[in-house]
Image 1 (cartoon, one colour):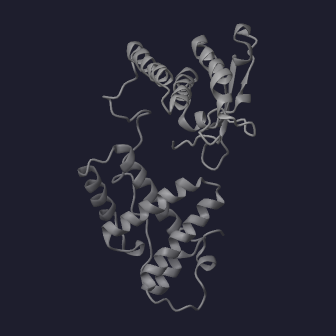
Image 2 (image 1 turned 30 degrees about the vertical axis):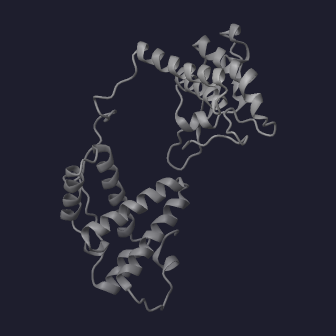
Image 3 (image 1 turned 90 degrees about the vertical axis):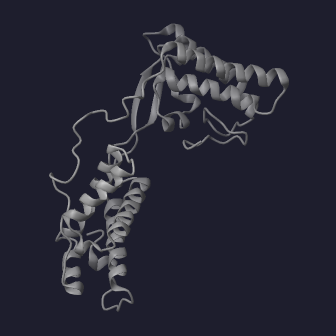
Length: 279
């Protein structure tokens, strides 16, 4: 199986630092197992970093970990001000790693027993890990903008565009693009990656709103994916005519100034390439 001990460790090799080498091999095997499940690379990388942090905290290797280790680590994380969702994500990563290391189909328990006289065990259980019991666990102090606050934000973005154009400042084009992007994000309820990956061809007509022309519907093709699945798609109806006007203005007066004819990306950089989700 992908990630099994006999596929990762070289038979008959003498390890200079056996404990560190076997730990690295288990992590490498776990990475292969996750990649074979088609999990996203950032997810795999994040879990790998979590396990390394946990190992640094304990100063021990998986075959010597115990339930008390995860409990002490969780308490230290909470004392350091980490959020509940972060702590639960860390606990889940350790639990999944332990399930993998203990699974007889991968052979890591047998390998550790043969080399060190000890084997990994599951150290996370219902009594020492956090449950996910609420749909929303964010800070209750956070709230959506009121209508007045939202209007003030859009007015400020528009004023930046007007000021840059009036004084001939560099960045006026980017400011105009940004204010259109803010309005699209709000009006169609998009995540940042969904916004960044929009194309000019993603807008289409909606028979229920003929007055909006070809901007009556937005096809979101890069929605948040489930585990191991491709990005989810959905269609979002246009319900805010003012946002449609912002898109029409952007496509007619702003995007052509970037001079990018070889791409259908909606939001462009000064070099004519698609903006990144991180940006």
